[in-house]
Image 1 (cartoon, helix red, strand yellow):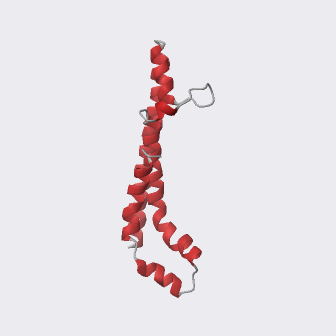
Image 2: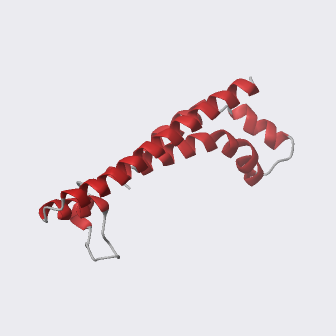
Image 3: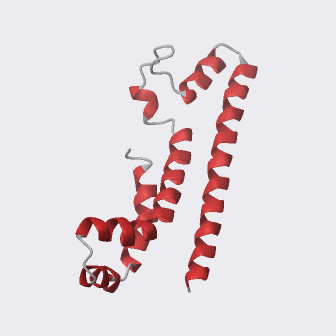
Length: 131
């Protein structure tokens, strides 16, 4: 949480700062309650930033090693983490196994980054269509 949550915050904060309060006031003037305003006005604007921030946080969490290695229990099939599995495979001189695990994690990180880029492209196109 301490390592990856800032990615979510840094993605959502600029969108919140640019959100025009007049839109919320207009929704209230038209009779929308707070929950309706949040659901139909604020969240559709924030949704792309939330998804991008979540994807960045997830991609960062996949590769996290330093802080997690100290709290991992390394109980088989319960609390094993991939960085610890890679290190244990390297300690056992199983370079093929360590490489296989690392390649899967690398592909997952690349997939997350591709999703982030597609989400940003979708957001840009959506904003251009609204303008």
